[in-house]
Amino acid sequence: MTEQQIQRALELNEQVVLITGGARGLGAALSRAFAAQGAQVIVNYHKSEEAAHALVAELGADRAFAIGADVTDRQSVDQLFSAARAHFGAPICTVVNNALIDFTFNGDARPTAETITWADFDAQLRGSVAGALNTTQAAIDGMRTLNFGRIITVGTNLVQNPVVPYHDYTAAKAALLALTRTLSADLGPDGVTVNMISGGLLRTTDASAATPEAVFDIIAESTPLRKVTTPSEFADAALFFASPWSRAVTGQNLVVDGGLVKN
Image (cartoon, rainbow, N blue to C red):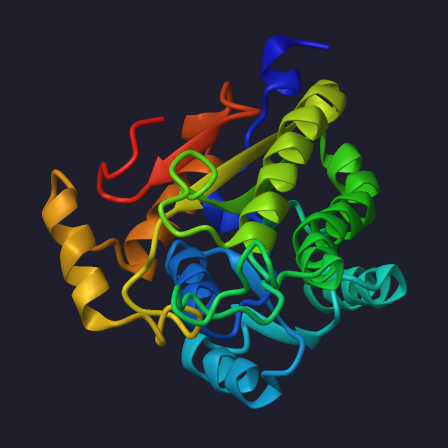
C-alpha cells in the first residue's frame, strides 16, 4: 500500500459528521460550521428535538439530518449510526463528542468539597467518558472501511487552570482527555486521529447563561485577545482537526480560549 493510500484524508465536503448534542449552544455552532464547509451533518439530540429539526430546516435537509439518541446508551448509539448510514448512504467518518450532561456554570451554586456526591461524578463521567466511548466503538468499523476517521472530543481549560472548582465536571473532562490520548494510540494504525479541543467559558451557551456578566468581563480582560471566545470561534478548531490539514496530528489537546491558558 502506498503512502498516499495510507494517508488519504477526506476533505470536509466529503465527510459524514456526527455532532452529539448538536442542536443547541456549542453543538449548533459546530453543526453550522461543518455544514457551511459542505459536510453532511448528523444533528444528534437527546431532549431538544424541536431545536434539532429547526436547525436541520435552516441548514437544509440535503445537508443535515436530525437523530435522537442518548449517547450514554450504547444501543441507542448503534441505532443512530445505522439510521445515519441509511440516510446518507455512507458511514460516519467524523465524530465530535460534544454532548454534555445537564450542567450550569455558576460558581455560586456549584457543589463544594463538602457537599458534592459520587452521583454527581458518576453522571458527568457517564456523559463525557461513556458517551465518547460509545460513539467511538460504534464508529470504528465504518472508519476502518474508509481507512480514515476523525474523533474530536470537547474538553475544558479547567483541567489546566481550575479557577472555579467544578469538581465533577473537571474530573470527567480530565478522564476524557486521558481516553482521547489512549484512543489515539490504539486507532492510529487504522488512519483514525483522536484529538481534544478544550475551551474556556464561551459567550454564550445554555451552560454559561447563568454566569454573571462580570465574570465574562474578567475573563476578557485576562486574555491576550481581550475577548471571550464564542461558540463559532471554538467550532473553527474542530474544522481543523477534521480537515486534511491535521492529518499528522493526533492525541493532542488544543486549548481554544483566547490565550487565557497556555497549554
